[in-house]
Amino acid sequence: MIVSGIQRAHIGFIALIAAVLAIQLVMHPLRSGDAKQTQTPVWHLTWSDEFNGPNGSLPDLTRWSFDTGGAWGERELQHYTNRNTNAHVSNGALVITAQKEDYKGNHYTSARIQTQGKFEQRYGRFEARMRLPSGKGVWPAFWLVGNDIDQVDWPAYGEIDVMELIGSNPAQVYVSVHGPSPFDIRSHTIVMSLPGAQTFTDAYHLFSIEWEPLEIRFYVDEIQYAVFTPQHLFPGEKWVYDHPFCIILNLAIGGEWPGNPDDSTTFPAAMFVDYVRVYAKQS
Image 1 (cartoon, rainbow, N blue to C red):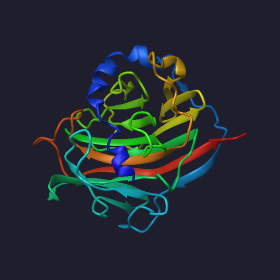
Image 2: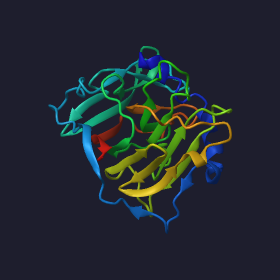
Image 3: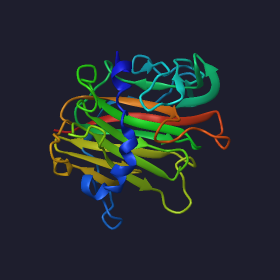
Image 4: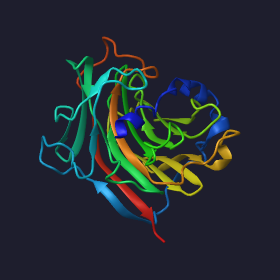
């Protein structure tokens, strides 16, 4: 069952800030002058969810499974449920909602869905169009993990964080890759900031990666801003991004990295997902 494996996926993530400070050593961010529009893609669609079900319905259970429970590796505060109050379709979008409520020993509820056993793919373009919540202690994410998650420990199965946002700073998103290292808590992380006074809560944005055998490229709104290759590995690491990965969408509350909510945090907090699409490269 994926819960026991994926719970380990962010253990040790408190080293993230140190990794960000070492950003030039671990992943190549494109300078502003290097940023470029994605060329016309040579991809064909292999899987998608447009979230076009009836209003109030659960996400399509032929595509997604719920992770449930209240004990998560980053000392988070939420209890993930499979209730439509925490995850439902509304007007063509998936809405994952975190609520402040006492539930089975936790003080917040939310939802986390994933595709393990229903859809997994090696390489390709993975994208989600999303509008994100804000507030101290709010932590939305769109990420991928290796399909061998139940056979090996984190981070040996590999993890690609396409987007994470810390709600106290809604103008920035983080992308990371985690893989085997002599120091398992070490990550390769880059921060992307919107210009001016824009935030990721104001409108939908497209978060995507293009993953090929020896390269992972990261995009926001079709602008490439980071690339990760084997040349960016730390000594002793190996490239583990060579097997099928599955997809996770979740909205966490609290924990060692984002900190816990305070009186300034507004609940309910909602993450909107217009669609998730996956492509394979044309031969």
